[in-house]
Each structure stands twice: as C-alpha cells, then as structure tokens.
Image 1 (cartoon, rainbow, N blue to C red):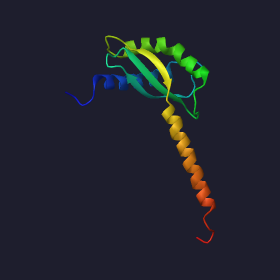
Image 2: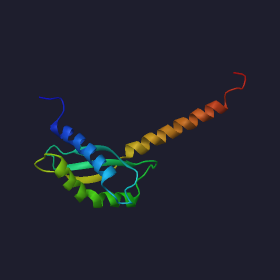
Image 3: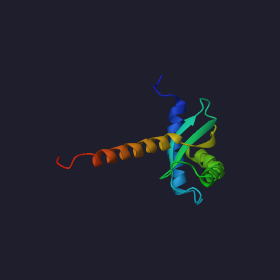
Image 4: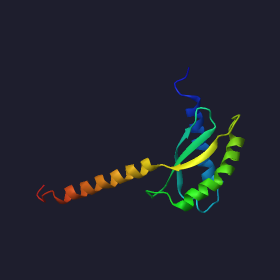
Length: 124
C-alpha cells in the first residue's frame, strides 16, 4: 500500500492541469492573476474543491468567482481530455483564505520590524 491515497495523487494532477488550462486557454477577463493553491478531492473522486487566490489581494472579487464558476464546465471537459479518469470530478471553486491570513501576518511582522528599527538608538 502506498503512502498517499489515490485521491491525493489525482488532486495534485488536477491542480497542475487546472493551473495550466487557466494560464493558457481561459480568455475570460474576469479571471486575471489567479493562482491555484490546492485541490481537495472526495475519496470517490466525484467532487473536487479547487482552492485559489488572486495575486495581490486578500479577498476574492465576485467577478473572479463568477468567472471561475462559468469556466468550470470547460475545465471539466479539458480535464477529461488530459486525464485518464473514469469519472472527471465536478469542480467547485473556493477562495483560499489561508493565504490572506498568511499575508496579514507577514504585514504585521514587517510593521513590528519597522517600529523596532525606529526605536533603535543611533549610536549602534
């Protein structure tokens, strides 16, 4: 028995393929700088939740979400052509809030660092 479940391997493949399709084949202006951060797939491989972020933003614009949802059917057909799966999973897009949380922490740490530098005496 391998260490990784088949669902995990399929999820990783789907993540790479969707990222490639979004980059090279989707021309929807609502889907700008979107990065696929992960895919969580059900054990029966029927449903895939695709996590994404918009570069430079801490939240998801409704236009981007709508653009991704409208592209879901096309993405599913393209995945069907690229992957040898009996059933291509239904795709649902979800904004990856962990990235926003991480970037907020990064900003706070940078702010603390700047404050500490201001308070360092000049004679060092």
